[in-house]
Amino acid sequence: MQEPAADRDESTRGVPPKDRVRLLELARVVRGPIARFLRVEAASGIVLLVAAAVALFWANVGPPGSHARFWEAPIELPFGSIVFGRSLEWLVNDGLMTVFFFVAGLEIRREARDGALSSWRRAALPLVAGLGGMMAPACVYLLMSGAGPTRVGWGVPMATDIAFAIGILALLGKRVPTSLRVLLLTLAVLDDLGAIIVIAFFYSRHLEPWGLVVAVLGLAGVALSQRLRGGTRLPYLVAAAVAWAGVQSAGVHPAIAGVGIGLVTGRDPTPGSDDLVERLHPWVAYGVMPSFALANAGVALSHGTLDAQSVQTAIAVATGLVVGKPLGILAASLLALRLRLVVLPDGLDARHLVVLGTVAGIGFTMAIFIAQLAFVGTPLLDAAKVGVLVASALSGILGLLLGGVLLRR
Image (cartoon, rainbow, N blue to C red; front, side, top):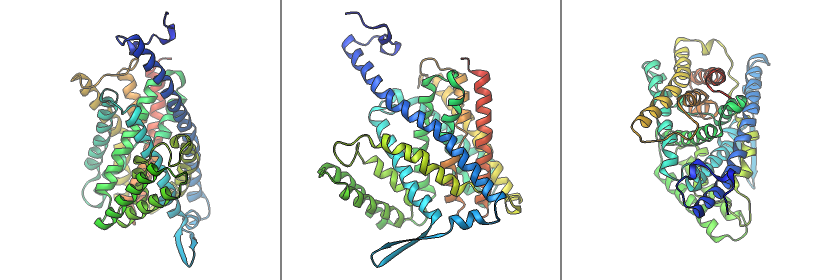
């Protein structure tokens, strides 16, 4: 029987007919979740932009100090005779962001299992591009930040915000092939993983070994609770809470516990449920990330953010993202292509890599998160946030302009 014309794909050339059918069926299955993931990210980029604009307007045009007072308002959670008190900002940054990192861990696991990271051939290009896109911005920042307390922020320009970046590609419409969107998604997944490693090893203070032991025991409990499959989430949730508390007591930001929990979590802690990424991703995209933007993008542009050291920090962050990101991604990719270590997906060339590197300079959510760890309790925090916001705006505009000029419909 003749094979349908739509099924004759260049990617299956040389594959036996039986295996070719299986590959094409797998491709159809995989395209569905990826397409839905990209659509959610593109739409959430708009929501994130509105939230950031509202936060900036609130902090600079609203009643003086009202933004900070609102997010610093205490919240008390009673547990029997014990009252757990924290601020609203803590609830977002340490609580809700755990869910953000949890979904990131789930996505890394899924991509490593049967996605773009499941083989060296698939992962080679985004891995090389991601490494270049993390190292170059850090080097640019260090070159421009000078000596002193500003140097600690070298990790801030390393991260890419997938929601904003995918949103920019969506605005370019049919000029952007699907393979470029998938490449950006894979690059962002690896970028998040690199940022998590940087946070764990370089922005965690006074590590407490016993806390790490508790965290490992909690993660082991998460894995064990799924094997038991008793039809209830309670053992899973208790083990996850233990892992979260262990990470916090170890001196690592507790939200990072979400990554570990996501990596050891299967499809769902209870049988018969849908894929967790599919279920949680919209909540993170439309709820967690905009909440983070509202709480953290409200920088009051006062004289405190305009002194020489603050300006130097903001410029170093912005240059690292706007210049370092595309330079690192393009240079690393072209070098690896020349050495035949990687191959470009069909239909992509150097022009697409230029656009990819430019929009990767949008570093909103993760960059601000790292800035809070690098400059905690210092006036340079607001300056770093300004650098991230300016760089994200510039990278988005440049991405649209370059995409309109370089990419044909």
